[in-house]
Image (cartoon, rainbow, N blue to C red):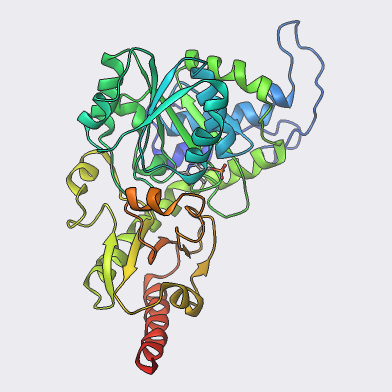
Length: 389
Ligand SMILES: *Cc1c(COP(=O)(O)O)cnc(C)c1O
């Protein structure tokens, strides 16, 4: 099999599988050993060295999916993100970040970087000039996240990657929301791709994991820090993740389809005042999304019209669960103000355009009619409450 030419779902299913030579089982065996006899003096296998058989095999699959040379997997998305950032930043260095970031990443920067003497700037305008005007002689990293959480803003990946390259800066992207199904930033010139594998790669709300994909040289640099920080993944979870990724293409394509249908329906709905989804023509970044994405993803956000209470609406939903995480096969919803972005100040939320009544919707693989029906019945109930007031 010429592995250069094989398609996405074949990579998902087969790349990196471990042959069960002993019993000819259908799936990769799990190797739970923490201790391995030396093959030669140089190869020491140990889970915290990121080189157990299952870790190495899964990394091949993940690297291939993101069209990168190599990858590492971690015990959480934040372990991947923090280890990677600390591998490229030291005292006196400067990093430029998008303002609209995953809350945990923003907390990492705001709470830890000062202690380590690392300078950081958030861009105010999410444009190329916005990034360019923040570059300083000591800028070492530009970090983006697109589509972003929770308003699904889109950053021009190719332009930012080129700007970074021109200035000898390492470019990093959190590609969690898009997943490798919808966006491959390495093809657009990005140096380092990060994932919370807890989300689409895992896809079943039962795995906490993270991944980083880059050139062999950059992965080795990250590994040198990773073995010290010790954020490796248990081999049982590695095995679960391998199993989960087999259906990544199928799941995400279905989620793309459901989300686009729901976004269009919500956009026309009289009780919904705003919908944020990059697949809608009304989205300010739609043209850019169309250029750099293969599908628009399963995440969308919306606001109920004036007079309707978002918290009560959430409670009245029967099928769609209120839950913190996202990207599972089941649909979930949350209020960013009350959960994912609760640690930010009102002003910081305002700067990101997050209104108190905003709801973030992670669209699952259910039948779209059932999801619409659930939203409609919840709206009907809160409209009765509105009339009673
Ligand atoms: C969840 C998430 C993370 C953090 O991942 P964990 O697995 O929870 O550590 C990072 N970035 C994005 C976009 C996420 O959604």
